[in-house]
Image (cartoon, rainbow, N blue to C red; front, side, top):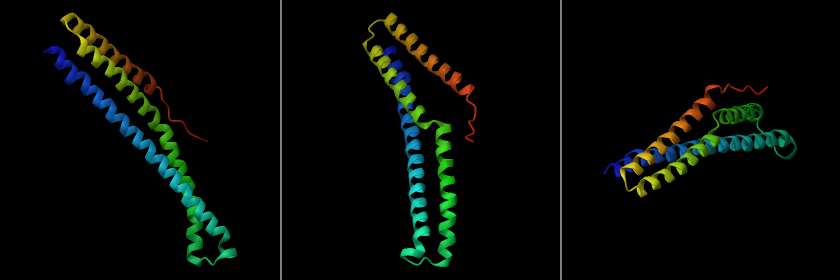
Length: 151
């Protein structure tokens, strides 16, 4: 039946894509946040070890330079990760995909409830409108999205 075909292969396919992509975006956001926190922690430990090395314990000469390099470069790397995540807007995109999956779930339910060909056509038109509107919003937002330089 046309209703079941549209529901399963069109709407549910889109829901699966939106849900999967939301999860990927969320995972990227979490990974970058974890990396930033990890780099901060390593930097903090390196700074403490470097600054208190001669007072509480002896730091080998080769390690002093390594700790100094870590305390200078890791914050820059962490800032780069944070800036990359902010520019890519992983969290925002994850939420947007998740919301769209919810909207499409309502369309799927409406399609499942459709009993006549007119109702099926109405739900299909509304679902297409929703998808086109979302697609248009993406182009509108991303088309003029400049790279923001943090100075």
